[in-house]
Length: 367
Image (cartoon, rainbow, N blue to C red; front, side):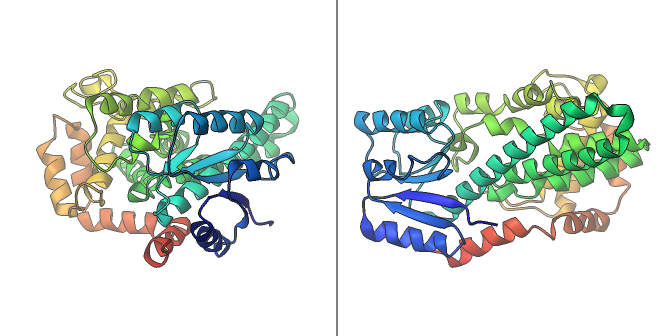
């Protein structure tokens, strides 16, 4: 496999060389330019580079114009802006207009690496999805003669879903592996509650993996914000169930998948979102997932708090039975020992190679 090609644009020779060496050591093919004007000569060939790292110490109308021209000339070029923008409105505007794909500090190697991996994985997933959709369309006309091929494509489809959620999880190292963990928790709870139909269980797994797919439309400046969110930012975050449901609505997925994506933030007391469903108005699979999601959130580290123990998680879940959670789902949760829940978590998260690469970069790399 050929190394992925990255073009670095940085006026400071020392910083450019250091960043280039750092990324070359991670097996990327690097080309350097000291300005956008110099970079243009490398961007003439179609798809010569799929990703550009642009370092800007200042940002004015001229730079904005250059970015517009760059994206217009290279619409398929991924662009990671290395800059400490002090104006959050400007950062949101650049992301919303599609002029840049990510914004991160030039002094944060971990964030740079995360953005690069996420961008390349997103591109690979888009290619895979396009290939899959074309193959599926052809398959529909030959369905009776091609049952085995349909089965093979279904496996590719399932793998693509998992890879998509891994790529989304990589946007935030603090929640990496979250989707796979809550998917396993949800399956265990579903079986305890008497759901034993293989197809329905498979749909619950898919819904759990895809529950936060709507966050792909939420800017990193909000999703990764280390401080408290403003009311307007919370309003955008709360859109992600509806956005996610909109993304998968036209795909031929079963109702359990859509139910988890759309209703996983509803509460048993009707105080959730987006539709304030109360009690059993919310589908069972969504009520199951809500508890699974909370269990992983409580026992995982977050930037704004430390992880808590499983006994503390059980106490909080029991305290919120009938308010946040369905009492029957809480009863099912409590019927399993805490040691078993810990074991499920360990078995689900112990093999995460992409995250291990990221953690090693965090510990050993400095720009």
